[in-house]
Length: 112
Image 1 (cartoon, helix red, strand yellow):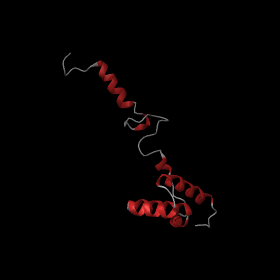
Image 2: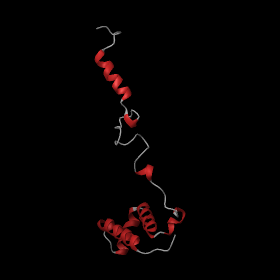
Image 3: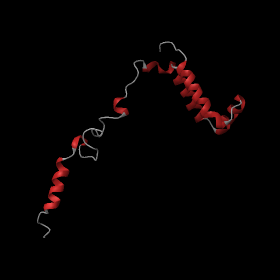
Image 4: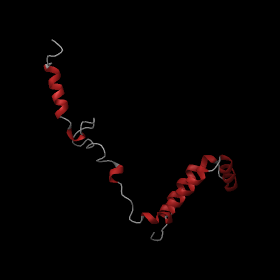
């Protein structure tokens, strides 16, 4: 077979690849039920802000998270000094933070 002659086996495969893209748009995403293409589904596509997002800073869980971020931005020496002052070992930070978030979430808060 010459190079300019069509190959019957590859023509069928190419035709199938061109027409059988499903809803994935030919990006390697499965067709129906398999994701629906880029940017159509997923957690970020269906995420929506809470109605009072501008007042989120008033929510206790947001305040706890903000303190965790600020604590993480401190130099290690200051983190150690704070933990020593509070009597908390560094290995207990995840547990203390988890408990703080749970308690903050369960406490009744004023409408933000």
